[in-house]
Image (cartoon, rainbow, N blue to C red):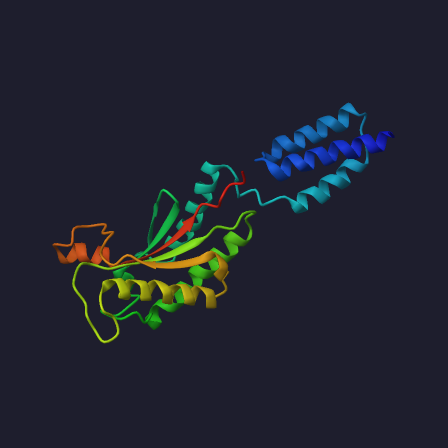
Length: 222
């Protein structure tokens, strides 16, 4: 085996480590430089470094579980900054962006998205698309519709189950139209079964009427 072959094998080994494990980019290149020095310095290493750096994921994305949540919170915070009524929360599956009733997505008893909500929803889609596209493992996104406990029975919706599911589905379709990958999206309606406040006051009912866009933590490889 020639000297160059040995160095090539070493570099291949380091590439495999990057591909299958979490990495600290600074430490990684420290090891690379140390290897170069130990081998007496080799001019090919800077060229390899330039090539490798172009293929590594962005520094802002950490593949550890804690880092994953931090990344999702950063995405949610960017969306929260779009409108003072938008909020988010950490869940057991990831991070959920909350679009409350005061965000004025729908008229009462309707699943049609109001025109004034469209610009912000487009911005939400753009943030999600840009952020998740830069990640190594794509996250699934679930859109959930929630209602208060006020009974509804119209020619269009038999109950709050149908209304909440229709609202979630319409938000999903809109996000797909704005460019999100539909293979990673799902919609669900929870009616009044997952309240965040008591339904015995108007304020509580208002808080319970909402859409949640939950970004689910990417599945980790086994």
